[in-house]
Image 1 (cartoon, rainbow, N blue to C red):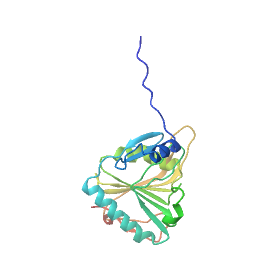
Image 2: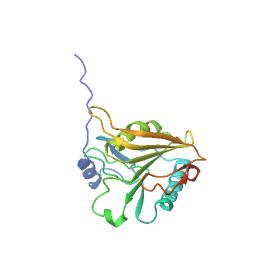
Image 3: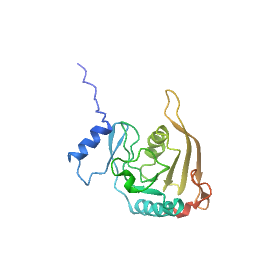
Image 4: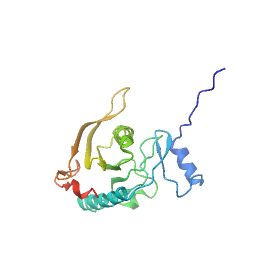
Length: 190
């Protein structure tokens, strides 16, 4: 007799949120829902945490007061995904989101060292599928910024970005939504 195949339970965003409301997760649990799977987030090392702080400040200066730069907060992507990107620039103010997390972002940024393959592959496809127009990875391994733009959804294939570029520390980058403003990649790196 063969052993039964291992089955995994895929969770919806509603089920995931309900479990959080019921206290099934500890406040110290660092979790996110990606494509129906509940993933644990690895503990942050000092360079990762410092990069999030530097990037948050740089983005707040760059975008100005009409956006909210959210740090490690839920972003509603689809019925089966509620990632918590390191940073998400969303229109408006915190009071605009008292009843529900944002469903989109102007820019999503992940700071990546040990999670580089997850951020490049699975999360990049997830954000492209959600129509996030611009996605950045602050790549601590290679000390660069990876810029992804212009999402494209294809039939029967994972969504992808049509444009990608690695930006070195001495170069500047301008977000799509504010092309007249730019920052130097060194402003993001620890």
